[in-house]
Length: 390
View (cartoon, rainbow, N blue to C red):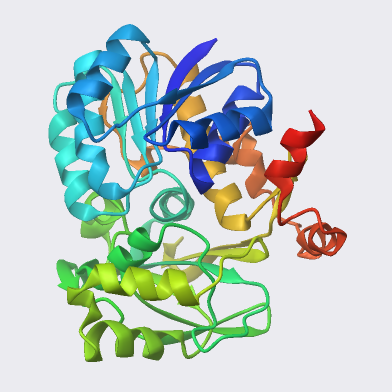
């Protein structure tokens, strides 16, 4: 069995630990600064090969000691982005593979530097965006003789928006603010540029529904470095319901809350509810020449909440956890194939979708599953109910 350490017992870490542990191919240690939170996740899953540890991963000494006492094949960070440089350094010292979910550009650069010359793999930016969207776009790129434009668009949205933001908090608030507030990378006229977040507003229609999309930071990952010189334009934008961008511009730019992110985090978490009834939209479009003709190919998918191991998980939890566990599985199952810094686009989309964890991206889901669970009354306290039933 592969042995892994997962850091962070929150929304994503809880599902990552369950997917790996319940596959019966992994022995999983789950560490969190709140030991009780990690214990609650372990009790909810009830897997014998899943163990909780109180662990402050922000302390390099504490993390190093844990890895020395409990050696693992891989360290998986589902912590906030600003924790990941210390975690990567500890993984390098311990000789363990490293994976994270960061969208932060500077953190990724630091991880790349740590990975230089390493025998083990360092794979940042796993998950949905960056992550799966880069893999999907890279797969389409291989179909073209010449590239012209590459568009990456992703959105995690409430199924039933009913507030002025037309949004619900579906993942890390700190990560969301980071994406909305930091400079973005894009290829324009064949040159790598920094562009402003919350700009580049456009309309996009998918399956008859109108959305908006705008610049956000980090979603492009390393794809621009890998393929940017081959095309005229490449950019990443976040999908939202129309009107959201204007509201966020008011908060972050006009009210200057981009410079007071602690206050903005408090406002959002106090006013914007969380939901398990969401939908993730993945949209990649590549334009270029095939056999001398100008053509476009698209990968478009909608992923809805799913019941896994008897519990309802939101679409953003499913897509993020599925993305990183599929990549972890491919690295650990192909010993010696990956080392040093590994970009997401080095993985084939066909391999991800065929993987036992990547299969959760399969198209064809609907909002009916989450609706039925919510109507039954089982969604709100499902972890507590499952523990009580044991």
